[in-house]
Length: 40
Image 1 (tube, rainbow, N blue to C red):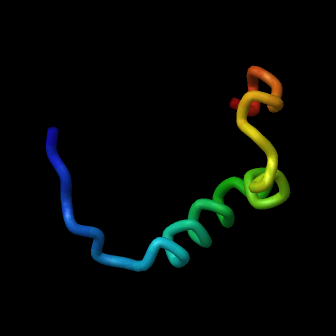
Image 2 (image 1 turned 60 degrees about the horizontal axis):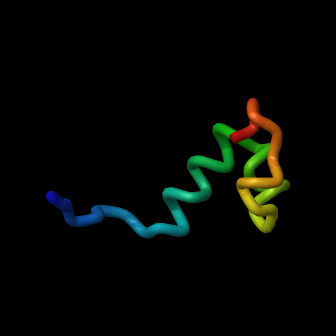
């Protein structure tokens, strides 16, 4: 197993992901198992 040190904050990285995939921001409280196959 390996690991690496994070350079930025988790909140900043999540913000960047949500910019790329705005649908994730809308569904962040939804369980992954309840999403459609394409959304998973």
